[in-house]
Image: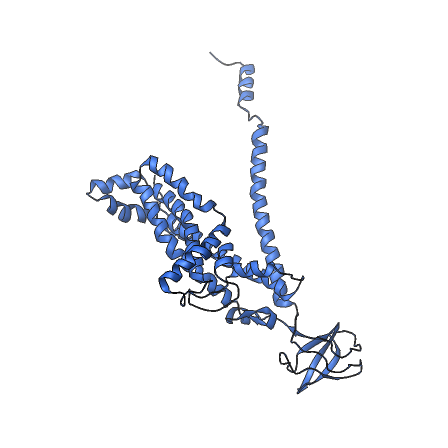
Amino acid sequence: MTETSDQIQITKKDMRRKPRIAETIIQTFLFACGALSILITFGIVYELGKEALLFFTLTQWEQPNKETQTDVLRTDDRILISTSGTEILPETVIRIEDEQMLVTAVQGASLSVIRGYNETIPADHPEGKELMTARKVSIVEFFTKTEWNPQIGKFGIWALVNATLMTSVIAMLVALPIGLSIAIYLSEYASDKLRDTLKPTLEILAGVPTVVYGYFALTFMTPLLRSIFGQDVIQIYNTASAGIVIGILIIPLVSSMSEDALHAVPLALREAAYGLGATKLETAFQVVLPAAISGIAAAFIVAISRAFGETMIVAIAAGAGPKFTFNPFESAETMTGHIVRISGGDLSYNSIDYNSLFAIGLLLFVMTLGLNIFSQMIVRRFREVYE
């Protein structure tokens, strides 16, 4: 029996792709969400980079705590200033009100200057006018010095980076072994019912506000450490208690991601190990753990990134004031803690403190981005594919 031409045309018509309007709308919406997230990321990087660039390129004006001792006429090329405050050297650009001047020589409290510098207009200035000195931040100084105090011209970022690294290392020493142990227990030893109960319960820790953890570190962990090591050894604000509590905070992150990686290892590998006479402990550590190493490494690095970015715990418990120290029992200020403390004050736009926040934020972003790129390299290098 042969098909007629009308039947063939009807069959071809039925096989044509039919428009699915709802599916197209959903697909477009999902694409828009993904594109929006990328655009937001680029926007954040752009703003951080733009403001951080101002920190390194704009002339910053500092207060040397000096003022004029006599009236300054617009024709004067010598200025008598007070002897207190920061020393002013030749080739320094100073400012009185809106007029800039270039210092050519310094003789005690007398400055020889070139008036109307940088196309400013010379003017008369009465006695007692405040001097400002010009300052540009050097990238070399930013990455090599260890003292951070923009108000007095100290721009060594390592005081903040070191405290951030200390708290993160302490947090990892707490979270990694405990989180991995929990993951191994949930994956290899716990029953399905117990696993379904313990895992959501453990993740409740991640839902506790970090400000609560901060006060927990200050009111419980610090007194505990002082009772163990002595009150003369442990300061009230210290990076040790902050790091330990950050470790407690990220335990659910480490355990959950590591458990997912362990649980994804095929059951056939476990059964083969049991068939060869391996115990459950030997199977867990010599078969399952190496097979899931890429996922576990990714969990560790994501947890480190989380520790880097923690804010409220270190702002409350670690201390306020940049300090370069390797002693975890002393107070120190992390990058995020410094941003919180400074941004809470009265900052004027384009001031040195305001622009420094973006430079710190950009550096923190680059550090976190580097860790995430490294985690992707680890995952690709050690990933095991099973059929």
